[in-house]
Image 1 (cartoon, one colour):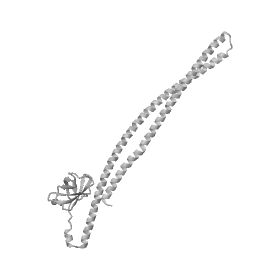
Image 2 (tube, rainbow, N blue to C red; image 1 turned 120 degrees about the vertical axis):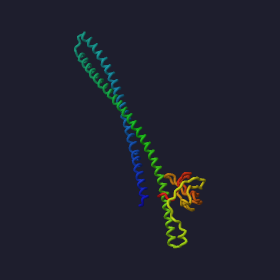
Image 3 (cartoon, rainbow, N blue to C red; image 1 turned 180 degrees about the horizontal axis):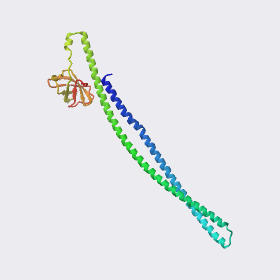
Image 4 (cartoon, helix red, strand yellow; image 1 turned 60 degrees about the vertical axis):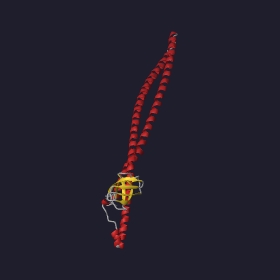
Length: 277
């Protein structure tokens, strides 16, 4: 495994780690806050129903108390009339029993009022908790949008890296073909072929000065090692653009045909014979 392959493997592993963390966050967190939000809404609905029930029960007890008081007043009137007529005491006992029932009803009403107040306070607490949940949901949505933007940037970087890798693979393929051709010439042992074999040159680097259709001119020539038939890489920062096949060479500039282009070349793009140097 060469150095280039190791670098590519490391870059892909880093991208997979970033993407897996983001995907796990997107797959787990949104479901948790949705479930929490649903539970809080259900609790608030149950609390509202309990408050309405307690209010109805309180109203019913109030009506019963009023009815008991009315009956007690009637019994008190009957008792007063009975006392005038010297009626026995059973009516007084009945009045006492009714008064005890009224006291018990008043006590129950006070308890219900306390329960209603407690329910109201609990409802306010649930409302505050629901507001906090909404704020948490908004924060999670913002974090989700940020993570989506980061994923988009990582995808762009990955695509650029893949284009560079493809360019390097093409360069390696060209080198292999050149080596195979040189090996054939050595086996043949033809002196004329050996004399015509192109000599290795150092790194050639230049800039495109003009583009017209499929033709482009560069600011380097024979003085810089450029020769007719030379195939140069065209790149823009980390992006592979295409190849320039040199057709015309002067001492200080050259021109050629653009082939296998991936992007539209423009003036200012760089050219080189070796992306690895």
